[in-house]
Length: 464
Image (cartoon, rainbow, N blue to C red; front, side, top):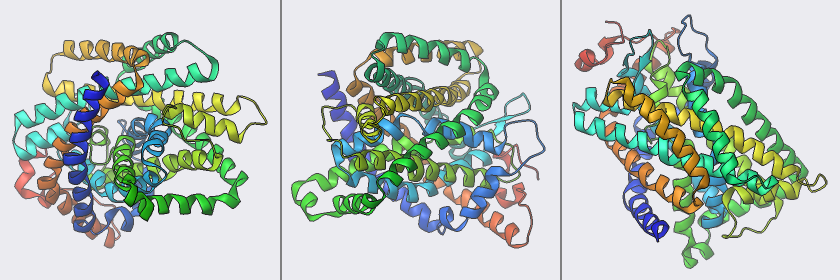
């Protein structure tokens, strides 16, 4: 009954409020910013590997932490769930939202850099709560967002991550879920007690290794079934637009599930990545905006697509009674049937790395906003304890309950953020125009308050 109630609330919020707002914002920013996610793709890659002369969080480390949060359950279990419920066409709508949503990711992360504040330890902190407070001058709105993201990432999303790890290891080697949940909660507590730099150091080596390994396995599967790839791609597109799907009522389901699971995975416009984007030491806000837009492409166009191809090329039966991660395991196991159990084990290890790095990165998003609400360190300590307990509880809970709870809190948080970046987007546009002008002159762009003189008093970290 609880799961049914949560599903009704989550679906209503998502279908009637979040999805129209998310799609409209993505299209608006893509047009208004002249396709920044496409025209400056080369700059995205250059900024990712650019070296700085600072001792704080680098642009790459900020990218790694945000990818650690993005790349998790949504890439393996979420894609499978989207295919189960929405059909292969859901994958197409995930691609569309990644291509358009990268513009929203650019805007929110540029704003986070613009409105960041000193953290008192030689670094920075920021995010939607800060640009809502200083940009829109609304303390209540900022606190509302801070509460929503702390609950969404620290509690709901981390419950989903630990639940998926527990399910994967229970399916592959019959390890009791309580044992996996206990182990993951203890390991999570050990990492998150080390703070942002500990999380950044862990993420900058773990994320590239796990992402590259997973993509390589996916490429191996594609090469083994290369003759069927055009057929699968055709199936995805036909299912997204097909007449049969429209008549049968599943066309809307494919679109809704693709957009919803795409948002859960790449977080574009959701308001999460800006929290870590604000911590990077860069000379211009646009630089981190570009890096975080690249994160959306990396998450959805590479890793989510890898999972979709694994499932659709394997030929396994897509059954609604099978959990998302179990379907991904069965698909890879079918491809490597000459090594019994290899696929199940590989997906279990992959989801362990994917979901665990998401847990520690998700915690950081919550901590940043707890510090925004109150400067009392006791609240941070209490939050760490509660997050650890939710990691354990999530591993023991019903899959449907944790996914439904995540959908509700995600929808509320994303709506709150999107309503903020739409009016504030003009300042990000001024930053982009300034960046492009300096690039045309052959300069390494440097931001000064004179670019946005009307908000100069609200941007304390930038020079006159």
